[in-house]
Length: 147
Image (cartoon, rainbow, N blue to C red):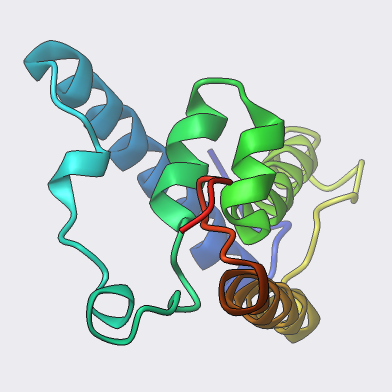
């Protein structure tokens, strides 16, 4: 597949995107074949363990797992940056595939911009502050229960 209709930066990101999709499918396949839980593969969060607070990434793994199960609402609850990232990824990959397949005649390929990263950082920061506020002020945990 010729990607000359994309900038070098977008070409690199496009192929990295396909590699990430392949790795993701392999992980899901391994999980299904070995009947293991993705959640059980990660160690406990050190910030949560020692400080009793959530780290900026707390809930990310659960958000991925629930999104893969089709539960968008729970995924947003656990960590909204995951859904934002998946939407951006899909938009980037589909629009650039269309641009490549049309040999540039349909030039709709989403281009990388630092703004997308800044938006993700703002989502992570707001999520982190909100979840720790709810934990400290009201005792509400990430799973929705009281501590």
